[in-house]
Image (cartoon, rainbow, N blue to C red; front, side, top):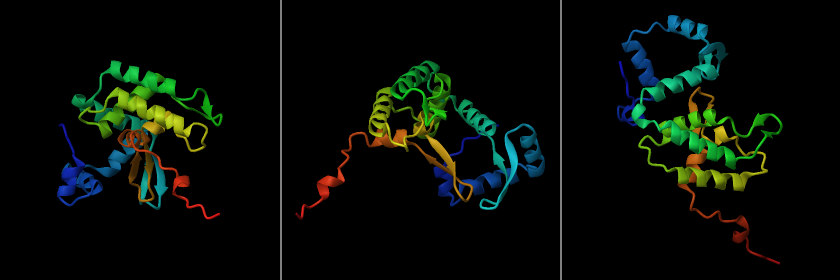
Length: 199
């Protein structure tokens, strides 16, 4: 079985992604209790009651990585070549600061990890593979130039994209990389230029 799900089509039928996935589980007669036990035993989720979202389990890093791998490998037409990903990851790593942020996390992971992150970025935000390496490198350089030394500068992996879990349990994705690419030529108007001198 091969499934391709487009959120725009789900919207067309006045459904949410959550509703559609639940419907899919019902149609395929999934035994949720058995499925949850199996996922927990394999380390993909853990038991964790979340009163805000109403769920009784939470995803693990292994679960997220496995999910992303399955999605990516099921859509080979949207995958960048390993050579391109490795070269691009190397260049982005060179742009970023060396060492650790606040002595805790490395600013940039290893090239292989960055390459995988970029692959997921392309799948999520550039399915037609229209973005060029030059655009990505230029946007990354601009971000580092503007944010270096500031406490809210993101690690490279989170600059590429980050997915936070909202109070309702929904995934809230952000991508500074995509934002910088789309706004690369915009001039940052300083607020100082808008002040009127009164004395």
